[in-house]
Length: 383
Image 1 (tube, rainbow, N blue to C red):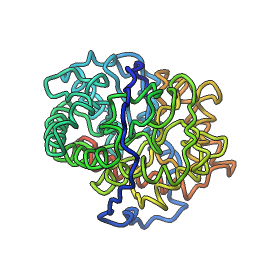
Image 2 (cartoon, one colour; image 1 turned 180 degrees about the vertical axis):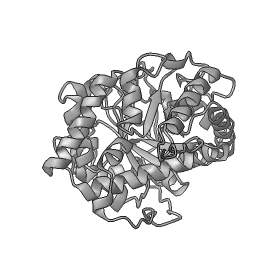
Image 3 (cartoon, helix red, strand yellow; image 1 turned 30 degrees about the vertical axis):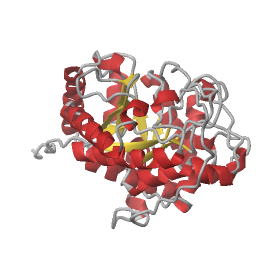
């Protein structure tokens, strides 16, 4: 996500990292059961479901409208600049998107999402906005859950379905330039239960929760909004430091996990950012037993854009195993190029059609759970 650089959290006298084991409550969630054959799958609907668009303005322009109605795009990500940072402004967007879904006879809601972590990363300026996670966490798990319950209720009333929070990164590197007080802290034994509490609180208040930034940004120096950082950690250290918080959030029922742009050669990522690495993204399915939606961080971050154009990055992210793509470019016309690139990649065989459909099933289940209900349209009677 595009955020201002935050003050670096200086970590003094950290205790040695300890392994934290968090038991998962449930096995991987099965995909929704369906009866149609592959021949009946709607390619355009499947592709559109996986994309999340953004705009720089405060209106649904003609290109964005076409992406949502003709392209059947599944999500819209808004920042405070799109709606004046007010609950009323966000609700106005939600009302318009809900009416559009109904009038266009869409099968699933358009999932409205935003970044409402708390502290400096707050899109809706209102009394329900929580403090930074570092501050909130000092009150303990019950306090975090209560804060997130209140925040989520406010978000829900404003029409938001999915919050791109909480941050599950453990901040262990004083040269980190992006996480800072967005993390609950520098100790996995402290951070893990607070992440679980935050997920539960969001569900209490009526919005979906997204764990970020997998596999963890807190141990890397730098900021992927500027340049892709490298974390040289071994797999053993990752399992003891960064993994427990993601385990805890998944155990609490997190709806989505966001992958990000960090080089993690020790996790099998090689020379590719984590979000484009099938071995790293695959850990969510095979090692953390996560059955929900895997989404990317913004593909328009500076570190990604310096190496890959948005259409190519979108195809690469889907090929690596992500289900949902945050385009976050702000230019709907350029985002339309990403949609076209995915379609071409499926038709050429570069992207697996069945796998794409599985991703669409996961995303549509998420949309149906947390998206705002709309009145189904009725096709006009034949003359």
